Image (cartoon, rainbow, N blue to C red; front, side, top):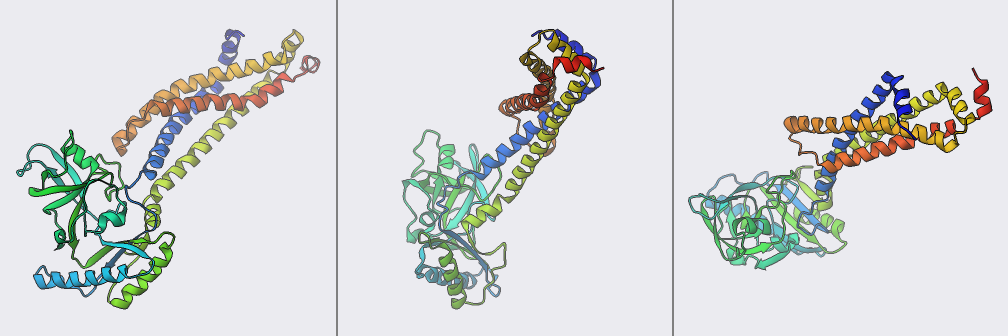
Length: 411
């Protein structure tokens, strides 16, 4: 089938064709970028934290009448309160392990600093988040230790949270960044200028940040039980006993010392599954919103194609009958409208591709969005072409069933 008659017919309906082309182009530009946003959000929500999230509980509380000074007596009093809580939690029947912890992935509330190979902080510098905890922290979180050892009880300090412990455990990305050829274990590095020896390396530990930063897995474990008005613990419940352990923990903690606050949602007892769900709620909402927008746009575009083709079939009712009378098969009529729509959709896809990259450039400038990969535009283009062919199928089939006798008799 030659394209010249189709092009000639389209020229007689320039305004209608232009409107459909623009609709397809705008839909493609928005859908391609929306698919990219959805893909980013889904990828972010699926990112592993590096910890064993099953049966893990986070506890954060405040001592309302705790001492606020930095003198030794105040620090010792805070530490005594914390050690009593840890002992209480460890004695519960549904608790498998407990550790002091200032932070946990996805919850912010962390400190960060620079790790260098030079005491004067010159040369290579690796940005990392610090997790303060005791000798049970690595095991309680379920981190995979790929080299070295855990902290010894004798290495655990206590006091105000600050980096610079004599020994540290680092994540594999930190070790690789500092020592690209390996052999990070046992090496001395400097945390904000303070020397520390790497005694262990864990495979992966996401920082408390939820953003897609370049240092999302740059984490350091510090052997420090941080003494503060806020005390944080991580609890590993026995398999399948997470809810029971949470009930036991709340009751036992208030029985030991009722002078504590657990204001929700910033503090309290939370299963890590709840923390993950809350942390990624905005991403799920954005993905859902973009999905709804894409669905509406595609439906509107399909409806526009169906409406235009149906209108043209009605206008060409007599011409279709004439072609049928001259020997055109039903398949020929069907292919005519399919090819006609393909030309229109093709023009919209070309314009939409340019608009998609232009819209992405604007989003990159104003909203720090990443560059749109070609695969999303290609996927959107194929979807628009397929949608166009599917949308035109019903009116095209109706046109192909026009009776030659009925058509030639109509005026």
